[in-house]
Amino acid sequence: MRDNGSSPDRTGPGGIDLHLDRRARVGSSELAASLRAAIREDRLPAGSRVPSTRELATDLGVSRGTVTRAYELLVAEGLLLARQGAATVVAATESPVREYSREPAVRRPTELRWDLRPGKPDLSMFPRSAWLAAQQRALRHVPATELDYGHPAGHPLLREALAEYLGRVRGVRTSPERIAVFGGYGQALRVLGEVLLRRGTPSVDFEDPSLPKLREIAEEVGLRVNGVPLDEAGFDPRGSHSPVVVVTPAHQYPLGVTMSAQRRTELSGLAHSEDRLVVEDDYDGEFRFDREPVGALQRLAPRHVIYAGTASKTLAPGLRLAWLALPERLVEPVRERKADGDRTPPVTEQLTLAEMLRSGSYDQHVRRCRAGYERRRRRIVAALTERKVRHELYPAGIAAGLHLTLRLDPEGLSEQRVLRRLRRHSVAVEGLAEHWMDERRRQEGLVIGYAAPPGHAFGPALRTLLRALSES
Image 1 (cartoon, rainbow, N blue to C red):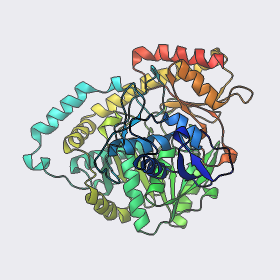
Image 2: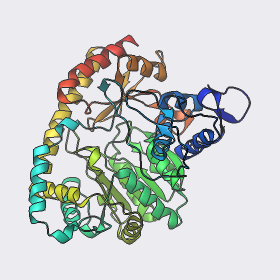
Image 3: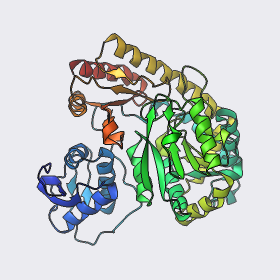
Image 4: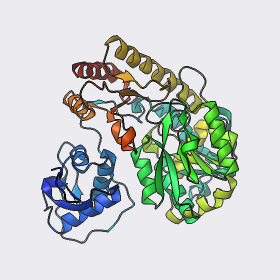
């Protein structure tokens, strides 16, 4: 299905011309629009199977995440039908469909048995008893009026609890008035991008490599996205020229590097001297295993650094709870933009998290998770070393977070062939190559999440992973 001819257009399912210029970067919106047109023009008839996300990503030369988000959008619009355990097909419809929907489709779980994808906690560790107890305490005392439409910045009790927690645990210098609560970090980044675009911001710098779906959010709101290379000291401010920078300084995703003290000082100084903004994505900052967690970059320049945190790694992604600690000048613009779309999580979830933070049960749960994930990391690192797998851990990666990164043996199989072999063993991991923006710097590898399997399944998942890697 790959187009190797001289035509500038890319082809897609079954050789269907999707009218995509191979010389241009294709995002999920462009791909969805091309597929939508193909369906409406009956070039993709009802009932026809569409390729898997990985197949189409390979054929079109785009990231798998780009295809996944395009498919999710078309499923939400009713143009594609996704069924667990079956191929995604073009839906039969006779009624007009919406041009665009902001409601994301539910992402199907992996069909592979052993889920070692990064960015996912062990959901079996969710503190059900503590959550229910906190919810009961919160609802027992909350006035009925508090269950009305909430404040666009989030419930005051949660913002108060977050301000105290972030200051105590991560060193963030903020106040309840400067915190805004969102339905996930992706939503927070989208709202922030919309605000910055309205204020005249033309571009944003991301770490290269970084998570493709976050870069795509910035592109979708209209910002130009640039990549800044990393080295063993993390993000290098000397390569940054945009007025806004997005970084993961505590534990870089996906390479696992921590930004050095010198680089932190340089970046905060640059933000202050040139009046730039830095978005600090502290997605798993609580999970450092070899020493105390590195404090937040935000405390060095609170007027120029936007701190972003989430409960997705500590509790569960399905709660859709994230927050920004904002510089004062952005508080009202962000609140106004949030109010336009009613993008605040349910008040009961906010009150429950506030009560967990206030009571200390959240800290207890994080400590329990940290101990469990530390044991898992030690096991997987030791196993990779003892089995003498030819692939190596990314040298500058630190003992932290929920994932580790392997660089593939340059004399061995390609990333795609290793991923196919892992799939044959029913192991789900992520490839490293798609995270790069600069093709010249691209490296192949694996991003392995060791937190996702429930406790009883981690051992079998690890053994299956090692067996598959030893074969390659």
